[in-house]
Length: 445
Image 1 (cartoon, rainbow, N blue to C red):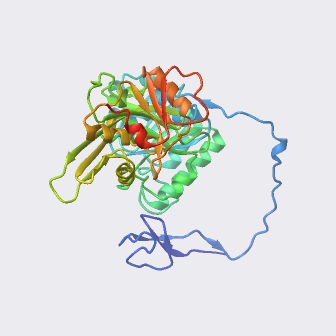
Image 2 (cartoon, rainbow, N blue to C red):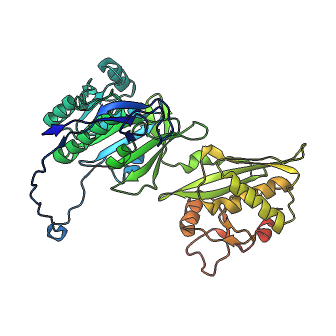
Image 3 (cartoon, rainbow, N blue to C red):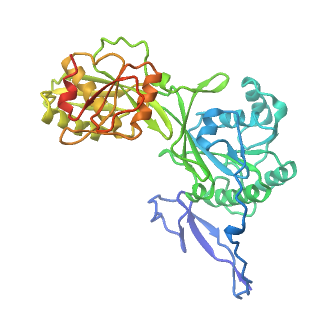
């Protein structure tokens, strides 16, 4: 005999309670508890036979089959292409280009099924025409019922099924309206079952909340194989694609795009986007370093400005660089050099809207500040690498040879690096190595 039980679940975080209350104790939201019917429970315990486990040694080693999308930046983030039978979640702010990226990826595949609950067939056809795509390669399904979408995909068996978006589809077996916690969980579970049983790759588009996470329960991100985020840079010039979860590859890779009237255009050489090759070398307060995101080196231009403060407390501002770390570097400069910035405002800007997350740019920031304070430029076409410690020592950074090799390709002639007992091999650059910040500042003339 089966019985039903009434529970109350939070529409924001998914927490469940046996009775209604005004506030969710998990996320602190008010008025978000909705009444639902829980899963049925049986009074009788069925005898369930045991399964025979699979010995992994008995399986032949097979390499996963990947489907290239024809978009080099997207394939790099995915780890080489979409894995057949994988479940991919693509999140991003409204209007950032999620649907455009999905359509461009579908254009390069043999066949794709695009199911949308947000746009009509004429709207999608207009976008396809604007992007210069071939409409014959795309089958459109204006449907929000997940069961009908799955039935259509099982019949057509496309290489890629695109759902736009997960918040608009619903399942008749789940309670709540489309976009609720129960509906998103039920629909995602059915799509995962379709991907694994029919070996159909699925790309689901999801909206994000104000804090930047995918709207819906956190179990959605745990359920899928790959979670991608498409975001703006600080200046809204470029679109940056990141993987925060990838069961089939690295999560350190990023893809850089530029939005145009013909869709998203790949930036195959991102270093050109973050440095100014025509920059006047006589300008002071400018330093160039190299950051690595995943397996990709980026040339980054750091700009510094110092000005006497007219108030009792000097300002420190940083765009693209950690403000707390800037405060620490200023204290190191004050302690270990003759540069006293206690009565100067200091501003740091990373050109191109790039956000530096590693410590390899410490030395470049210090020298840019020193150059701005002394009003003297750094040596022309010089790359600067190094982490700065609290005692003023310059520490080595990871993959330094690879960074210097990238600088050599970009036409740099010298490099300021940490002092090391191991010489850099096969580098044509003039290497200037220092063990302390005070000695490194002396190169500014």
